Length: 383
Picture (cartoon, rainbow, N blue to C red):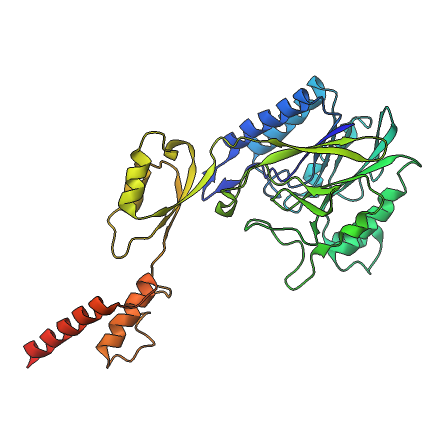
């Protein structure tokens, strides 16, 4: 049996106020092509389908059109769950119309806790869908005030799910959680209240043939080769600029996972971070073969001192500059911040503190002599 694992689409997301919806529409086309090309038996979407609880109508339409196409034009089953960015009731809209033989989409815990059963040459495969659920909602759903952590929520779900797995069936679990040891990016939202423990141990999934996880945006194993994050399908922060994005293709045989492969995804507008002086970066952007026109860019300028219309110069060669940072700048707010903690009676220390705040280091020997000469000239003029 072939399973295509994807997650963290965040449909409708923006990056520095730049809409990513057109990019995501092209990625959906790549997902569909992978389902067809690899003759996938089940497509798993492990949460964070949308970027917000009340998604844009264009994002909802894009998602619905994609599901209808997979269901109508392929033989693949569909398993999807709500993530921590999703509103559970919106994910389960029209759940009564789902084909119970091919579709299992879960939002609230109260809906469809049973497994989706598929078969191959080796027998049955049971797919359990465990949507993300807040602690207080889980207490109500399971009537258990002892649920106090995300691990407790997941443990209750797994206990319930195991009851719906037929004897001898291979068990595939889909969950949206932070498994211990996972590597995060700057864009994941915490799953617990401030100060709470949001991680769950991988040992909770004992007995599963494969665990398809969502939430962390880097593709990685989570405690065992058969427990995996596929990662987000595109970068949502510039700390992901150098990371290849992919879908995870999993093959099951009679014993469990027999093969795992990553299917590369091509982002229509990749993320790039460029660092250097303004003039050098502008020249590089004008060079033949430069990536500027087709990328979303963060620029880190290393120039010292004042720059005139830096963003305008950069956008002439990098049309989609979304972030601009100066490597050397005042660390505190306000023009007098650098001098606030320095004895103003010592002008040499005052200037040295200013230079350190602006560029990260004080004056060198030549600059110290220049400062001393300038101050001496001023003193002579006063005299």
